[in-house]
View 1 (cartoon, rainbow, N blue to C red):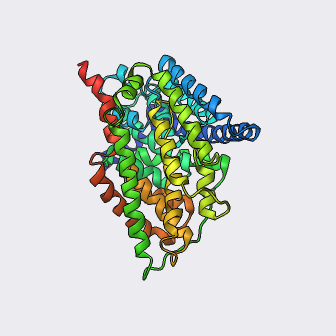
View 2 (view 1 turned 90 degrees about the vertical axis):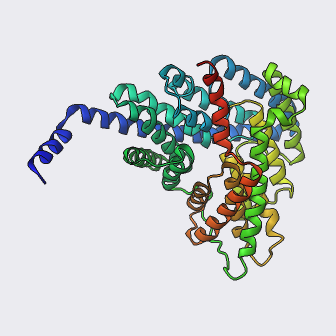
View 3 (view 1 turned 60 degrees about the horizontal axis):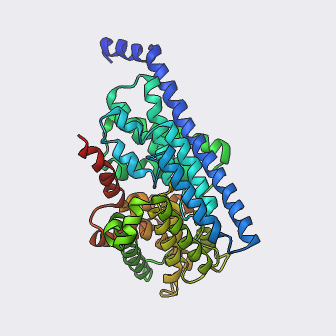
Amino acid sequence: MPKKMLRRSRRAWLSLRRWQRRLVFWLGAAAVGVAAILFAVGSEYVNGWLHQLLVVSPYLPLVVTPVGLALVVWITRKYFPGSQGSGIPQTIAALQITDATAREHVLSLRIAAGKIALTLLALVSGASVGREGPTVQIGASIMHALGRFGHFSRLETERALILAGGAAGVAAAFNTPLAGIVFAIEEMSRSFEERTSGTVLTAVIVAGMASLAVLGNYTYFGHTTATLDFNRGWLAVIACGVAGGLAGGIFSQILVHSSRLLPQKISLLMRQRPVVFAAGCGLLLAIIGIASGNTTYGTGYHEAKQILEGTASLPATYGLLKMLATMVSYLSGIPGGIFAPSLAVGAGLGDNLAGLVPYAPAGAVITLGMVAYFAGVVQAPITAFVIVMEMTDNHTMAIPLMAAAMIAYATSRLVCPVPLYKALAVRFLAPRQDKK
């Protein structure tokens, strides 16, 4: 190594300012992991509280859910604007927002705190939402806020830190480090820049270490040993890929074009009286929940795990009813994601399809249904198959999962040409662009 390069390398390693920046960044990534852990634990607690209410009476949601959703929307709009919905579209939009003040409206510690509290309130009220998407916005908010303390450059602050925070959020929420990296590349940035790669990797590693230190090396849906015979199993791959992609594409298309697809009176109510509209959505959610035998409330994590492990018998209509409940929850305007509910819908869909291909193991078909529907919704096939593969700890299904995800992606594109999160991010940016 030339002497000039050696001296430059030594100065870089001995620079107090550089070490200050590294320390701030590492602490931020660890904070993302801790926030994801607290969010996960809180979600389990509120889920338990909701089920205690259901033990008292399965009809309590007819009152609790409308009041709860109306309260969440009122608080969101009054005190935490920018925290509604999944949080992923806001994070993607933040990558394109150049004005620092405007970016603070979607990425800040206040937004992160509100996102956690309001999502938990929505869950205890019976909404069908997940915590993983919100964790992306929370992680990006934490890392973005630290940019001011670490004296990072503009590029790092506006792009690398946001990407790293979002990736760390996914990794810590699902305990899937590889999925966090892939998600940042495929979904949030749609490209990979060499200057941000180290930042993303470091954030994922540190956040993952924080999660492992507290929760241990768990798999989100346990462990499944289901395999697929290549000779006859490809029919299951095609069936799940097409059905999952079609259902996911329809779901996404409805969310993107809801204002145009809903009746005019309902669309006007959504825009002009959002709190009343949220209460109406809550009542509809309660009716769906009663029809499903109280299985469509919450994230759907436990129901998906039961379907995958074959430990409980859910209604044959579970997948469809869970999809409707998730759709209504998102349209209500409350904070909350669709990652976990989408996986639950996919598990229900796979359970339905398992009866059509009896020669394939039910567990394998259910897993294929999960990855296919998830890929159909988010149109990020690599992220979908990596997340499901890591969550089930089943690497023998890698090729079938990848094939199902790609088929679902292609099918979904026929129904919904623009990816869901990209379309929502563009819609979120539109009012800001009009003000320029």
